[in-house]
Length: 166
Image: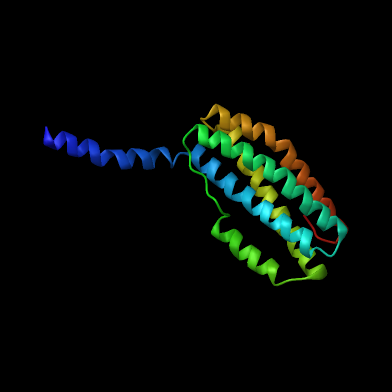
């Protein structure tokens, strides 16, 4: 009997780990970390952007991603999912690079990063829609995908005007 209790107690952390390592949990956590990076980088674009289009795009990122982040946080909380409170480590290196730039050099680096980030987010959302097991996560992905696609189109348009290829 003692052995059974010990096995049950040691299995609990593994069960919790397994629950937090599903593809849906990856979706929640990746989307949250990306959304936090979008808000932070959007604020940076508003402050450092040389072109008004960059400043305006940054403001849109702050507004749209802040709203999506709040909705995602509420959904995750209802499921007992703990989301990251800061962007992923790779996003920190991107911020350090952007911090060191100014003027048109900043604008081009920001645009390139935003194109890459939004392509990645579109892929993440599409994957969740196609194969996610959590119906609410799939519904959230379907809801925000058009907005993220419009962001991608907008930043690609800005980039095209700057000579940045897709």
